[in-house]
Image (cartoon, rainbow, N blue to C red; front, side, top):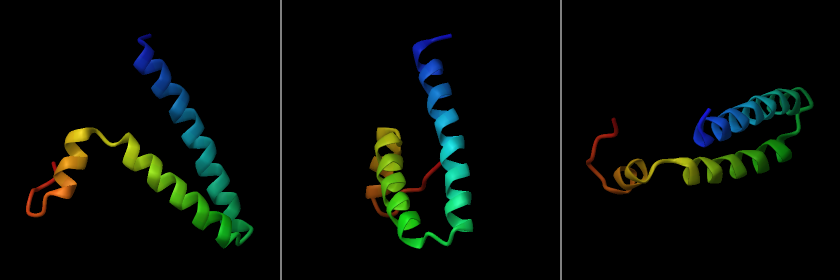
Amino acid sequence: MSSAKHLYSIADNHAQTVRVCIDRLHQLHAKQQLKRLAETLQKLATEAAPADVEKSKRQPGRSQS
């Protein structure tokens, strides 16, 4: 398994754990914690996006494929 595939596998497993935590936070009506987690995840999603995707988001009128 390549390093990239291995790292992806680890990240994917952790993402599944985060999904479970989000479900539980919803059950607990933990709005403040969900808000903070959403902000953190949004930052991570921005960092994880490939450079060409980020560039197209910043340029109005360009379609995203």
